[in-house]
Length: 516
Image (cartoon, rainbow, N blue to C red):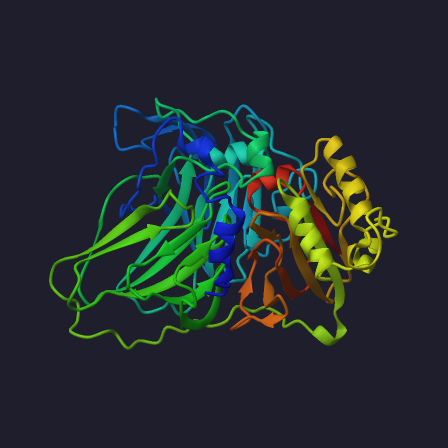
C-alpha cells in the first residue's frame, strides 16, 4: 500500500490512545459489534438506465432482528443498488428525492462533467423533496467507485445513503470470484436507533463521527466460505463518516492491484496493515492457501482498545486447484494525462485547526516545514507576536485562527474557511496545465483529502518519493506530514477539494480548485 508505516505510530501518538479519543461513543448505546463480512449480494443494476430513489427504509444493522434501524437508503437497501457498468459506457441515472430535505448525488472518483458532480450551490441546484434530477455522463475509467449525497452529507450518508459503482475493465481480471465490501460504522442507541447528534462539536473538532457498530454491506456477522486455491478479487470501499480502518489480513498476504479505482503495479502491502480512510478504495487479489490454516479473521486494528473482527474467511470444500494461480494481476492503465512537473503551477495548502492543532503547527513552523514566507502568502502577520526566527509568524497565525474559531469555524485551509469566506478559489489553473500541490497537515488528526473531478499522482511524503506513484483521488495525511500530488487540470469547472471525514468538511476543511 502507498501509506507510510508512520501512520501506524502516529495514530497512537495523536489519537490519545484511540478509544479514549472517541470514548463518548464506546460508553453508550450498543457495544462495538464485530461485524464479519456479509457474502450476500448487493442488489445489482447492470443497466445503463438507473433510477435511485432516496427515502426512508429499515435495515437490520445489529445481530438481534428484534431491533431494526430506521435508515435513509437508495431503493430501500443499505448499501444502495450496485451499479455495474463497462468502461466507456454512458450512465443515465435518475435521482428521485423521497426525503423530507434537499439532496444530490456525487459520483465519488468518477471524472464527470462539472454539471454532473452533485455539489449543491457549486455544480447544481439541490434536488428538492418530491423532485428528480437526471445525471448523464460517460465512464472514462475502469475501477471501484461509489455514489453518495453531497447535501447535508454528514447526516444523509450517516443514515445510509450510499452505494457502489463498479466500472469493469474491457478485459476483466481473471479471478474465480469477486467480492465488494462497503465498510461503514453506525452510532446507535440501546434500541438500535441512529443517534441524531450529527455535527456534534466534539466530532467536528476531533476524529469525526465514530460509530459503535461496524457493518460490511450493511450486515453483521456472517463468515465467508472460500475454497482452497481460490483466487478472489476483493473491492474495498470505506463509506464511513469518520472511521479509518487498519485491516490486518491474518497472514493471507493480499496483493494490491488498484487504489481508488486506478491500476497500480501489483505489490504486497508495504505496511503490516492496509489503511483505508473515509472515501478511499482498494482492490486486492487474495489467493486462498491450498493447505494449512482454514480460518483467516480480517481484523480492524486502527483504534486502540476498539479492535474487532470485520470478517472471517473460512476455507472449506473441494480445492479449486492444487497450487496458486499464475494468472497476470496487472490491470490496463486508465486514460489519464501525465503531469508535466517542469511546467506545473505550484501551490501549498496548509490545513490547520482542530483540537490540539497549535502543537503540530508550532512543530511544523519550528522545523521550517512551514515557513514565514508561506504564512505571509496566507495573509498572516509574519512579524510574529512570539518573536522572530524559527517561530516567526506563529503569533499572527494564532490570532487568525482565534478569529476564525470565534466565528464558529474549527478548521482552516491556508488560514481561511474557503466554503464561507467569499474570497474565491484556493487555486485557479488554466485548462490543460499541470497543478502541483503540497498538502501540509498542521493538525493533530489524520485527514483523507479528496479531490473532485480529477485523479492525481501521489508523488512524495515528507520529501521522500512514494513507491509506484499511484493515481488516486483521496490521500490520507498523517499529523505533521507533507504530501505532494500532481494532476493535469483537464476538466473545466469549480471542483471541491475537502477532507472526507465529513465532520471536518463541515468545520471548514474544504475549498475549491477552479479550472478555467
